[in-house]
Every structure is written in C-alpha cells, then in structure tokens.
Image (spheres, rainbow, N blue to C red):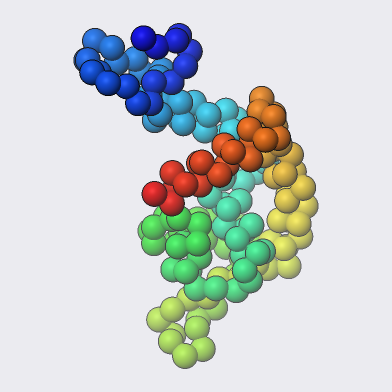
Length: 153
C-alpha cells in the first residue's frame, strides 16, 4: 500500500490500475524543474537558462571550443550553436578561429559578457537557495548528490 503524496519507487506486483502519474519520477522532476524555472525567470529574466549556463561555464573555464562548451553544459552541437549565436548578437560572447585548425571556433566572454555574468552569479546563488528552500541543508545536499547520480547515470 502506498501513502498518498509519497513516491512509490520500488514496489512488488505493480498493476496498471495502481499507476499514479503524480507518483512517477519524471512527473515530479518536471514539476520541480518548472518551479525552478519560474524562480529563475523571476530573478534572471534577461537570459534563458541555456544562455546563463553558457556564460557561467565560460566564466569558469575561459576560452574553449564551441563543441567542448556544448559538452561541458550538456548541449548538442546544434543547440549550443544557436545559444552562442544569440549571445554573440548581444555582444556577450565572441568567436575566433582556432589557431591550428581554422575549422574550429573558439568562444569566450566579451568584457560585456564578463561584467554581466559577474553581476548575475550572486543572483544565481539566490535562485538555487530559493529552489531548495523547502529542504533542510542536509536534505538539499542529499538531494543534489542523488540528482547528480541520476544525471551521471
């Protein structure tokens, strides 16, 4: 027997009629993500989460290839190209050809991009704190550890 409002992650003899959408991991993850995205949009409304991730990772690692940046932030080549194109149009990143391989493009923050991300990083900490606010610090640490384990699969 399941307790209402509790996830049934492992249970013997599951039957189709026992399926409850709101007890499924994908549904709960999507609801949590929607909550996080609403908090993000309210605090950092000028950038999309992929744009913010791009700037934050560039701030962290410095100049890197477009492909490597996509790998670092879990975006496929087409998606990262579109994100970079939009950030370039806003003068937040710049592209330069690779010195040894002219087919490869390197991406880096512009001065304007560096200033923007430096101003946004403290706000991003607040977004994380607000997203995790329903949890105790210990629960938040456990949640992030387990979520990372799922993500790394």
